[in-house]
Length: 286
Image 1: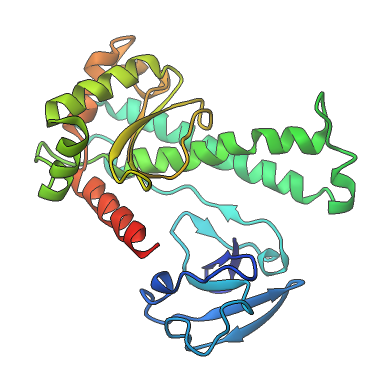
Image 2 (image 1 turned 90 degrees about the vertical axis):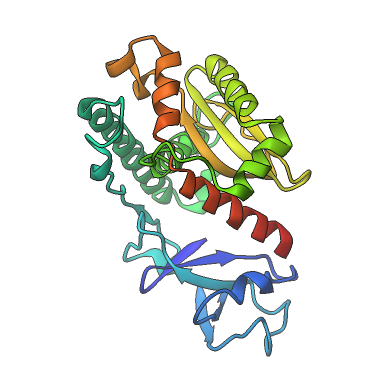
């Protein structure tokens, strides 16, 4: 993946793979870009892949970059991308059961992950490709250690964004499609909540993710330790629950049960329902 001028994200696909035509057609101005040895040529006006060989383009489409992703001057030539922290000031003082200090400190910690992923990638960028093998070693190597830790601040960044994005709701119940999906997987809303609490109890120093499994098309809970250990494949993430102590210690001490009650009272079910809708659309288009 790379970023081109105008804060547009490019998703690379190895040559020979069938392009996600159903994905391209959703864009208002679909285009294609061919990347060959970092030489960029354009094919504008691509409509559902017509007029372009399915094997000749390594990259299928690009679209407006999400707010948290910004382009650096060297991005077009294969340089690093700078991730900017999103703003969550609107949550401070507006989440029932959470003090402003708790949320402010949590946001500050999230900003630290953003800073670290940028630092790690900048350091890796300094190591020429031809020297990386010499700096990689099972016991210790500069490149291998940077690579080993890369997933922690990267996932830490986007898991926190998912968490903050699915907060700020009300006590309104989930929409019909989401309710049916929850009941189809867990039997009832109350069973789902009990399972969430059970997973959160043992996912100390980690996360519980409500996911949509693209294989069995059902919802599941995925326990994650740290930010990267235990993440299951073939999952679309719908709801993120932070179970690290920093998410609740200021307000709740060690009372995780009360934290979970406050969390559930603030879930933005509209956001969760939209994630499910997008997940099922992608699964049908695959």
